[in-house]
Length: 265
Image 1 (cartoon, one colour):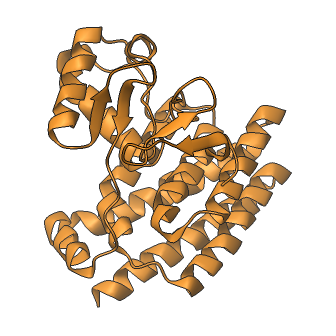
Image 2: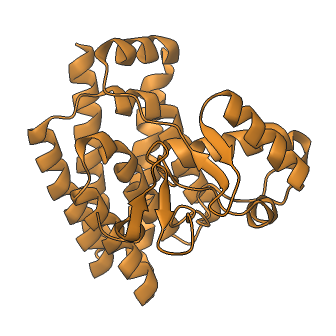
C-alpha cells in the first residue's frame, strides 16, 4: 500500500509495526482538524476517549500504529497529560490499545475492525431506530456540501497530493481494510474545505454510521462501482468543478444508502 505504511515492517510481537531504523511511527495524518481539535474543558476525559476512538475506528490510526507522543497529542487536544493518560488507560481496558516499553515502545493500536456481519447490521439498525434516515440525510447534505466547498478552493500542491494519496490508498486497500481507507478518503475531502467545524461534522456522522457501514458485506461489484464514484469525486474537486463534485458525491452516498437499505430488506 502506498504512502507511510509502505516503509514499515512487521515486528515479531503481534504484527506491531516498526520503522527502519528509528522505531515505530504514529499514523500518517493524525493532525488533521477532523478529529484532533481542542476538547471542551467540562468533559475533557470523555471527549478525549471519544476522539481517540474516532481516530482508531475511522482508520486515522490502523492496527499496529503507534500513537503520537504524549506531549504532542495532549497539546493538540489542549488537555493535560494526566487526562490523556487516563483516556489511554480506559482504551487499554477496552483492548483498543496497549503500551510497550523499550526502545521501540509507546502506545500501539490493537483494535481490529470486526468482519462484516448482517446480524450485527440489523442489531445496529434496531439500536438507531428512526435516527437512521436522519443520519443518512444529514450525511448527504454535509458531505455533498463539503465536496462542493472543496472544489471551490484553490488547493496547494500538498493538499492535491494528499487527496490523490488517499484515493490511491483506497483503491489498493485489502477488503479487510477497505472501510477504514474509505473513511480516510471522505475525511480528506472534508479537511480540504478549510472548515474545522465541517470536517468535525463529517467525522461525527461517519462515527454514527460506522457500525452499519462496517457490517455491510464487501461485494466486488459494489467496490468497483465505488472506485469509479470516488475517482469522479476526486477528479471533480481537483478540477474545481463545483457542480460535478456535488453530483458525484450525491451519487456515491445514494448508492451506499441504497445498498444499506437493500441488506435490511
